[in-house]
Image 1 (cartoon, rainbow, N blue to C red):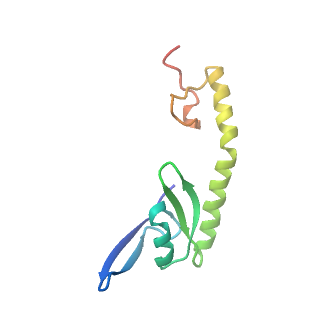
Image 2 (spheres, rainbow, N blue to C red):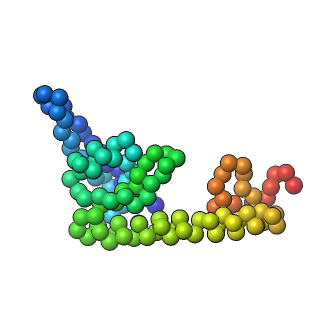
Image 3 (cartoon, rainbow, N blue to C red):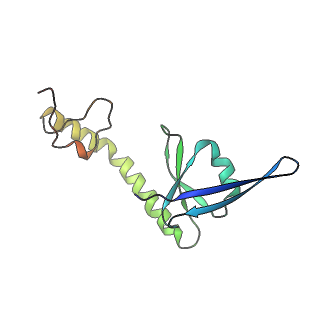
Length: 125
C-alpha cells in the first residue's frame, strides 16, 4: 500500500493564536497516517474532508483518506479492504497455526502469523 504524507506548517500569530497550512504530498487517492494526539487538531483545520480508514493502537496512529470529489471512491475501496483483512485475520492465523502443527510453517515468537511464514522450517527441528 502506498502512503501519502501531510506537510503541516504552523504559523504563530499574536495573542497566542496559531494557524496551519497543510499540503497533501502524494496522490489524492492514497491514504495518510495521523497520530492520535494530533487528530482533533487536524480534523478541525484540514482543508479537505477526511475520514478514518483504520486505526493502529500499537503505533498510536489513524490511517485517513480524503473524501472530497472523486476521492470518495478511493476511501470506500481502502475502507472495505481494511475491514475484509481484519475480518479474515482470525481464519488466516488459525490456518497458519495448523500448518505449524504439521511443520509446514514457522512463526517466530512475538510475530503475528502471516502468509509469508508458510513454507519456513523451524530452526529447532
